[in-house]
Image 1: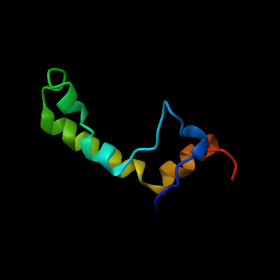
Image 2: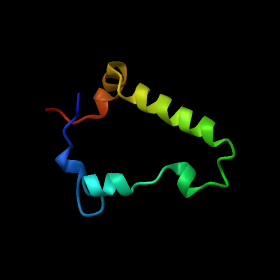
Image 3: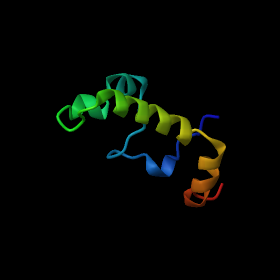
Image 4: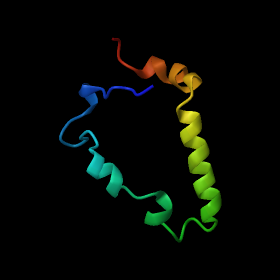
Length: 69
C-alpha cells in the first residue's frame, strides 16, 4: 500500500522526492564509512527496518500522528 504524500508537510525546505532524487540518494554507509565498521550488518539492519516499516502494525502505531482525513 503506497501512502499519498501529505501536502501540508511538503514545502520549499522539504520538497517531495522525485525519482531522480531517490536514485541519487546515498545510504548512511556511503556517507559515513568510518562510522560503520561492519557494512554487512548495517545493510541487513537497513533491510529489516524497511520491512518492519511497511507492516500494517507500523501504520496503526503511527496513525495518531497523521492529520485527520
